[in-house]
Image 1: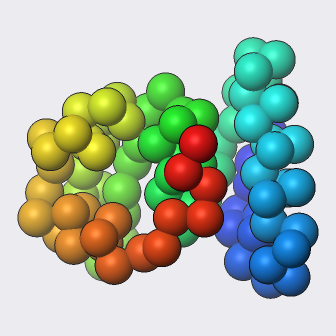
Image 2: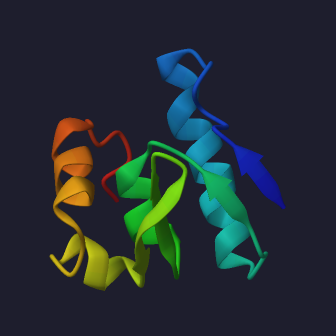
Length: 88
């Protein structure tokens, strides 16, 4: 399944519901490609994170590695500047 910013135009009250449905799809083993600014969701649900900056792959790897510091400075800046609506 392909999701391109599935929560970007939603009322804030619906964001959590959509992320819960997507999390359940992931738990079922569904393959998903998700473009998102929901960093908590990406960190906890994905098995691979790819961060693009200015049209190029900037950081790529397992979420634990990238969010654990094995990433570019630009990725760190991006993550620190975005609020985490789906921490768990």
